[in-house]
Amino acid sequence: MTWTVIFTDYFYFWYQAQPLDLRKRLAAAFGNLEFWGLS
Image (cartoon, rainbow, N blue to C red; front, side, top):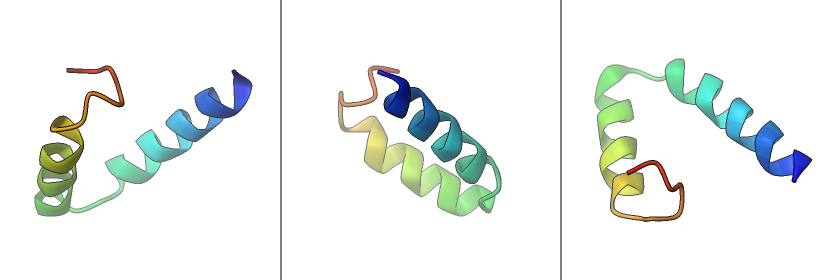
């Protein structure tokens, strides 16, 4: 679906702009979910 690609790209760029400590916490939180299918 196109909207998921757009959302994923938007989230990726937003994530890259965050401070490193926040990014680590987000990665840990999302890492526990198989939702993204990246693990």
